[in-house]
Length: 227
Ligand code: IYR
Image 1 (cartoon, rainbow, N blue to C red):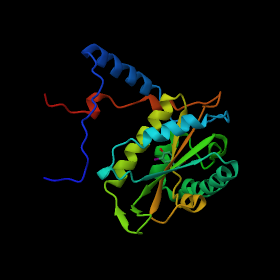
Image 2 (cartoon, helix red, strand yellow):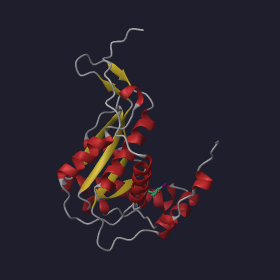
Image 3 (cartoon, helix red, strand yellow):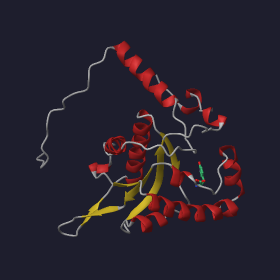
Image 4 (tube, helix red, strand yellow):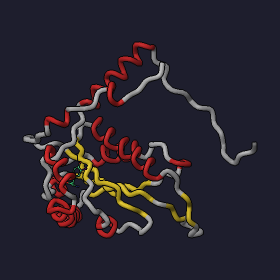
């Protein structure tokens, strides 16, 4: 079979001993056990390099046909953050006033969330992730097809949260509902759809988290093994 791709040898993964591997997997598990969704942020500045590296790491996620169907809008501009907060709170007021439905609102009670979203202005960075339903060739204007868009973007968001957490930053996955306003405020094209805002920064000194957040399902529930 002929291919137009240039194939290069895989440079390989580091070779760890069994015990190094077990140690590294346990260390990583411990790191991830410390991740919490933070809702109270400090205004303490964060280095742009840290954000840039985290977004680069997110862009290394696997994607359908390597199309990388994502766009990250990184907002630290105070006026824009204010505008996003105003628009998000307007949507959230309706959501919490009943649009969400009784069951959903009941399920959210343990989180203690409400329509107020001050973190959208306080946190130093908002990273708004857009999924690109297709791309447009800059030269020809032709449509470029994208594949497994939601899966790919979900993976990139996971990488992003992990990278930010690894750097010692708090994150909040915020999904104002609906969130079409983000496309308008941030001037993104029609073929892009906002997926979520990852709010990031240092947690506030008095930040608290619901104890329930520690209740993670065990492997007995989340896994089945055939050995
Ligand atoms: N978008 C709302 C509601 C919300 C929904 C879910 I599902 C959450 O896990 C948390 C919040 C808000 O951000 O308040």
